Length: 476
Image 1: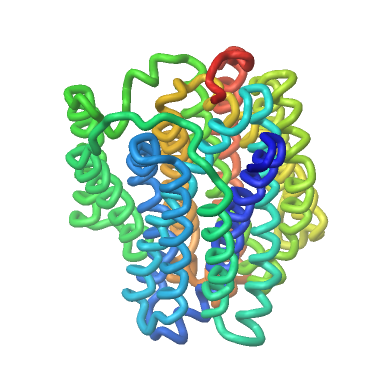
Image 2: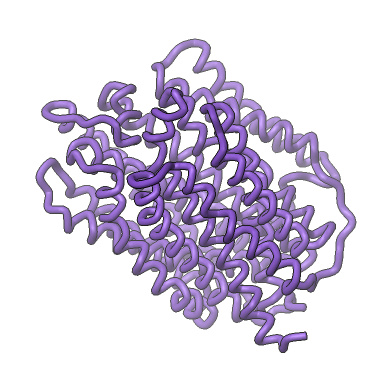
């Protein structure tokens, strides 16, 4: 049996590979969407659900698959997640139609939910409270590496081979890491007795689906009574869900956890940070591919310096958060992102490309500072028996922000230019010039101002969260 230090190194390497695979998949899928639409003879709005469906499943199931880890073993559920994600990738690669690809992406999302919810809990089980920031920083570096590889390798596959290889590349990584996880990782937490909240899952899933389905339809086809009703139904079901959870002895969303100030402020800060950040990322891609007439690959290459810097500094910012506390480092990260968005707000029709690189660097440094610190603050404040649920809950808040941000970005773009054009330039199959380009940039600037305002609220919450007790019990 390896020493404890050796085991920690093995565990973080296996988890990092999982995060890296997720990063590869995320960036490569966005690059490949235009080709997928053509080869699968699908339409733009349907193929948007290749992204939305995956995110929706991770968001809905985050807390429950985390609870499965608490009940049956976090390592076991993590390894199962790898196997499901890998099998889903295989099926995605063999898809013959748009609906089939969306369905297999949903299966991938189930594996992704098992991975993301339980990876954070495994880190909390394996590392002492004052060492977790560095561990989360290393996994953050893994995502940056994956995003870079997704851009480079995914771009090469789409250009010279076929989009199917962006899914097939997951197979050797997934199989090898699943085997490594089964052989090397060990359970370090006691099982708990709990029940799954199937009623809460159904209500929450229905609310999010109607909300996002309505928003996507409004973006693609314009406001109508039918689509407005879909959004309203989704919104009305959210308080119904909260009321159901209050009366449920084993809720999907354990509202008692939200009584802790550090947990509550950290969850909401994660939601707001994702809500602001992903909308800007999508609008930036649309700006580069639309008014600036860049290819998806060329546009993505301008963002690589931000991912590189993020990958380099994430472990260091995580280590600093172990020493100084999450409040300082996470707040600094949000501040850097605000500066990056301010740089993006200068972008126009003829702005030099290095402005995009500067903004990407500031944004990448901000992300790399915020996530490890915020994650470690959450797990330092969580009861050990609920590490899986809390880790899943953190991802749920962040993913809700991400999903809503994606829908809002397309909605904002569709208000300034024709809807079909907004979808086309996001996917890299359309360009805009003249008055349309100016209108889009004006809308983008309004969206950036909104995102900066959201980040300012997140910054305030991050500052007010208090300092977590890093030396508390919780490491087994």
